[in-house]
Image (tube, rainbow, N blue to C red; front, side, top):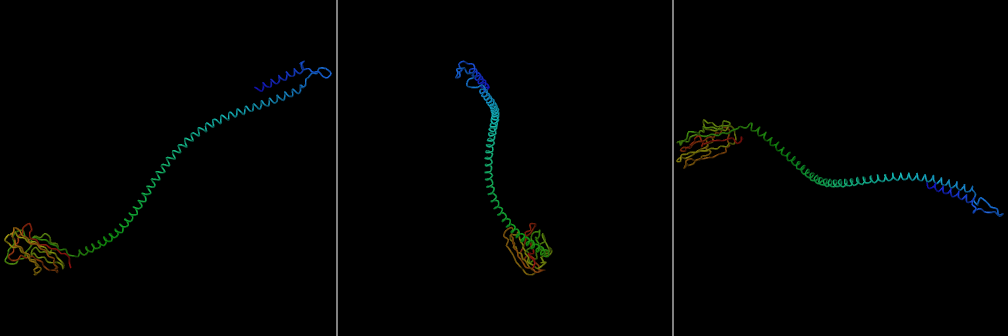
Length: 307
């Protein structure tokens, strides 16, 4: 718009100038003969040429200005786009910074967890070392127990073997044991002569070596035997006496003077007997005994071992 105005003004200026040069009295000049000279010092062709040049220049400048305006418009559009991109980038940067801060926080938490896990792993490693030591000690104890158990098994096996041997030995060994009491009827004696005692109440008689008819124990096998007896009387003025015989040999004679309501004489012997040897109890002359259901007078014995 401004360029068009400038061009118009230039054209008016040139036209005015032409009028002044061709028709103005003040601008008429005379030649050397004194005759007036028209046309001035500048030709019309030169002015037109200059005007055309100026027009062309103005047109070129107008085109260039139009191009510059288009480029400026494009630049403004690009600037707006760049502004939008910058805004977007700023927003993206803000989001990125927020995410970065989040990741930093997560990293801090993760590092804390890692440190805690390291501490836990260190404690677990210490516990593992302790457990390994205890396991080693336990394995040693188990090994010792295995060794001890093997020794015990060997001893048990040996004991079982001995038990089997004893069982086998005892199966062929006679079993002999007896326990008897005198009578239930009261006093026995005194007599004028030595009298055999027959213990008629038999409680045990394994092997039937004792005879409740004769009162005699007969050894069924050669061996070592154990015998025990008790003698009692309640007569305060009486004398308690009892004898043990092996066959016809007196083994012992026990006596006591009764100065109270009840008096006891008790003894025991261990004898080596041959098969068929006889053991019996006798009441000496002048001595007495008393027995009832309480079994104050007893006679018992058993085989310790055969020989």
